[in-house]
Amino acid sequence: MPVPSSASQVRPGDETRPIPLQMAPRRRGKPPRHFADLTPAERVASVVEAGEKPFRAKQLATHYFTHFTSDPDEMTDLPAASRTALAETMFPPLIRPTKVMEADGGTTVKTLWHLFDDAKVESVLMRYPHRTTLCVSSQAGCGMACPFCATGQLGLTRNLSTAEILEQVRAAFRALDRGEIPGGPARLNNLVFMGMGEPLANYKAIIETVRTLVAPQPDGLGMSARNVTVSTVGLVPAMRKLADEGIPVTLALSLHAPDDDLRSELVPINTRWSVDEAIDAARHYYEVTGRRVSIEYALIKDMNDHGWRADLLGKKLNARGKGWVHVNPIPLNPTPGSIWTASDREVEDEFVARLRGQGIPTTIRDTRGSDIDGACGQLAAEEDDE
Ligand code: SAH
Image (cartoon, rainbow, N blue to C red; front, side, top):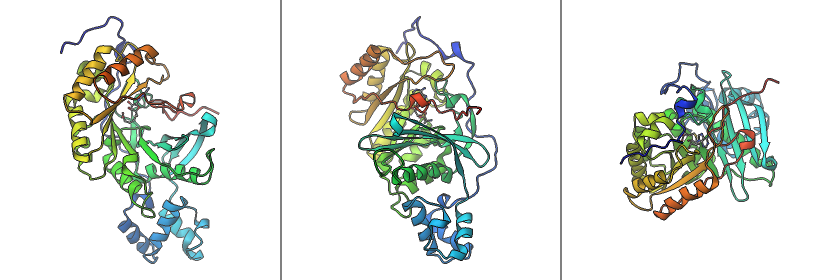
C-alpha cells in the first residue's frame, strides 16, 4: 500500500543523530550469585555446599519469598551460629536504593537502584484502588535505540541477572506487605517488564525470573502468569521461543507504526524484523498460549497518529483474525531534549475510534508518574548532583 507523505510529519532524523542498535552488551563483570538466581533444586545443593542441612533451603526460601527478607536477624529459626554466614553467602547485596521519588500521594514510587558495579536502573511501583503494579528493569540501559524513549538514548550497559530483577520485585512486595504504601498492607498483583531494557534481549534471565514469579510460595512469589507482562520491540525469534515455554504470560508488542517505513525509524529493530513478521509472531503467541496480545502504540503528534495509520493497523490485525489482540495507545511521554509531543486529544480520540470501528478492542493506557519522570519511556536512571 502506498504510504502518503505528509509535509507536516516530523522525522526522527530531523532531531537526533540515530544511535546504533546494540544486540549484545559490552563485556562486564557478573553480579555475585544470589539465592534468587537458583532453581529450588540448586538452592538445596547450594545450602548443602555451605555445610547446612538440605531443609534449610526451604527455610531460606520462606524468609525470602514469603516474608520478603534477606536479613539474618529476622531468621530466628536458623541456628544462631551460622545464620549470618549463611545469609551472607546466599543473599549478597545486589541492589541499593539511592533515590526514591513519589507522586500521586505516595501511591506511585520510583526507585533508583545502584547495582554492584554502579550500573543504575529504575523501577516504578503503582498502586491503584484495586490492584498494584510494578514496572521493572531488565537491563541497565537498552540497546534498541528507539529515538522517542529516554532509555533508548543511553545505549546498553549490561543485562541484569535474574536476582537483580527479582530483588526489584521483592522490594515492592516488601514495601506493600509492610504497609509502606498508602492504602494499607497489600500484595503485588501485576508485574510489567516495561522499565529499562529490552526483556527479550536478556532472555535467559527474564524467563528464569518469570518461573520464580509464578512458582507457588515459598519456592517463588506465587504470581499469576497472566498478570506478568513481557513487553518487546519485536524480537521475533525470542517471541516464538517465549510462546513455547508453557507459561502464559501476557505479551505486549511495541509497534508504534503499522508501516515499515516509519517503524524502522521509530523502532530501529524493524530493519531486522518487519511489521508483518512482528505481528505474525504476536499472532503465533496467541495461538500457542491463548493469551490475547497487546499492541503498544505511543501516539506522537504528526508522526504516527494519522487516521490512515489507524486504518492500516486495524486492517493488518484483522487480517490475522478477530479477538486475538487489543491495542493500547498511550500519549507520548516527553523525554528530555525531544521535540516530539503527545498527539492532540481529538487526534487521539479519532485514532481510537477508527480502531474500534474495525472491531478492535482499544484502550488508552493510563500514564502514571510523568511528574517524576517515571512514566513509560522516561526512565534514564539520572541522578541529580546533590
Ligand atoms: N523494550 C521494551 C520494554 C520497555 S518500554 C519495549 O520496547 O516494549 C515499555 C513501553 O513504553 C514500550 O511500549 C515503549 O515503546 C513505550 N515507550 C517508550 N518510550 C515512550 C515514551 N516516551 N512515551 C510513551 N511510551 C513510551
